[in-house]
Length: 143
Length: 496
Image 1 (cartoon, chains in turn brown, orange):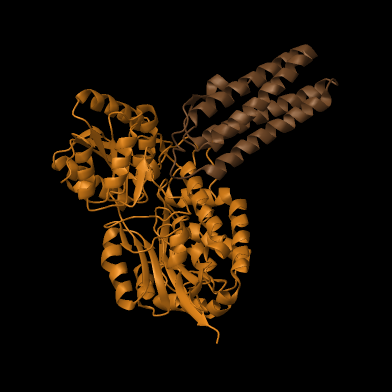
Image 2 (image 1 turned 120 degrees about the horizontal axis):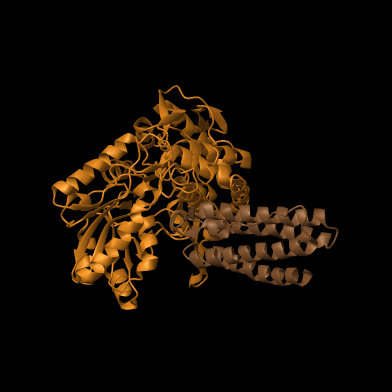
């Protein structure tokens, strides 16, 4: 499905963050290793989603192109965030890395397309993307 | 994608808010219709003149104490009010969509711009400050103070039922006046929700009153000698022929913001990729029902190549606009407010075709997403071969239509803009600073966009319509609103 409006794009972004958060929590639950880290990552995911939503609500104006700000294909950004029953910790980390990479790509694509939404929305998306790049490095080091 | 919950449940009867109480009206009930489903979602009374006068009496009684309340304290009421608006941001936005039909992005944008006016009015201790001159002659000083005037009336339109009364009301009460608001009878729920938050914020009874209704209430407002001034946003005939002259005759201050037929000029050096979405918002956002909407597109240049390519890009984008229920997050354009408005818009399209325009994109039969009656829906319509003498250029359509004209050069485009009877908002899209400056300098309108499709002033700037689109001197919003809602007292003093 193509995403055009800001409302549906932000909702989609929040869904992705929630899905990723639940995935990280499931890793924490299944494996005893780095439990606190997985929980803190999940907490950050939800925080990022809320931050972007708040930014959107604080800059959206009837005068800007809120309904025409995006042209994204949601299918390109869906997450594979499920663990199979026999997956080992290394598999879980590899999947977590893939989830982060997909999220990072989504943030970059959404930021590049939303310049018309005043600078705040794309700027915050870029900030989250930067933090995400650091997270990605941490995740890769776990593997 | 998600269909958001409707906040208005059942079919409530909307009450007046007078002297801090919610009171029933004796007037006849009017159906408030959701244009998506074409069904009644509430009923609102057409209040009587006596009921309006009772609100004015309450506002008068509240005025002396409110005026004496220090500006910093009045600002704190507004701060509390603002916090409540933020807390209720989403519900307030959904109410607008449900009662008006606009998309949820547009409603949230409306909510934000309404809140911004409250934020600006929170700065009233600074904004209301006067001027002082020491020693205008030896030992004589002179200073100016701004004082409130009394009770103001505020008349809101249907197209921005939440935001537009907030162009006036926060400044009026911040400066120490009291108000009686008459919301649009077609979309009265947003102001009622806002009134609930006013009540929760704890404003003293009588400072902020709401009386629903239509002509009877407007006449009572115009006739009541206790009303010192009126702000109005609506059609040009009502502003020009009713509100402005009758306020003048009775010595009331007036801001009468009226209709528009805005022009968007496209230069051949415009950035097409960035321009097209801006045009979609300008012409088709809010289903074209706003006084800052583009109505006429003027493509500059004699070469057919640019024109053809540009119009192809515009038409392709317009054709793809998703039309449906504004509470569906994927929807980009909702219905127009009611069937009468739809018929009126259709009448203009027919008129354009009769006068020689040709149809490039036909939105008379909308392609609606979801199972909804087509009673109030229209799709985007693009008419080409329009000329500046046509009715569709010289009257306000207030619908999702784009009339396309061509001009040889910028001089000709500006002449077309300036000849139009309305002068609310015109925009130019160009990469040239020279063209942009010439446009800004020579164009005769109050709100100018340069690579902006909707030239909506922020709350700290006046909403500056000009002749044909505005009757009065000062405008709503920001410093001009503070001037409007206050009188200047100049004091010269000498101590012997």
